[in-house]
Length: 93
Image 1: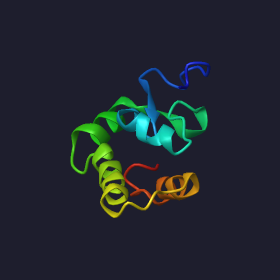
Image 2: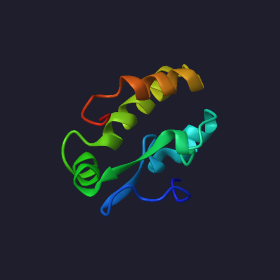
Image 3: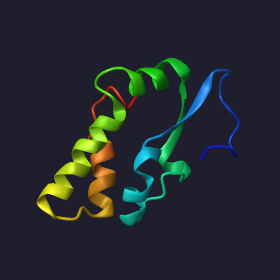
Image 4: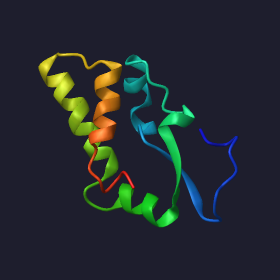
């Protein structure tokens, strides 16, 4: 994802703003989770907190994906990008 950019600080971790765990779902909607536009360097502390503590980052996306599945109404690529922008501020710093 961000391999071509040097780490900005020693403990920097590459973070997928669109979770790798759902890469196939995002790909079906025209989003490459490895696109550098959808990733950033974050501290290990933040990365661990987002994925290990409640509310978990992936849970936020799972709920959004479940709504599409339950309603049968397919999201557009732009709607998904807009959801990233609207993500809880805990994940967007």
